[in-house]
Length: 110
Image (cartoon, rainbow, N blue to C red):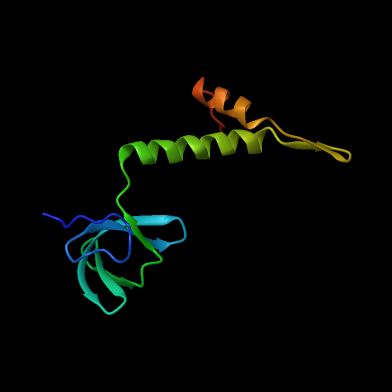
């Protein structure tokens, strides 16, 4: 059973959380030790990393993941519908991008 952690300070030993291995690449880990201002995390089978708290967060809920995916999708739509003609930049309104995303419109990459 993992220890509870709300994201404040460093997680306790036994907490299951997410560790940012590289920028934007979060991996699930378990805190196996703490020393001073560092938490030592176990990732996968053979990777042990230490953090001072800047690259660790509680495991996100499915609702948080869905909200982040929605926001990323809306941002992609905004990027796709931004263009410049002469000195003017034309951009879709955020509320319009939200409605497009909610209607099932997605940016297609090839």
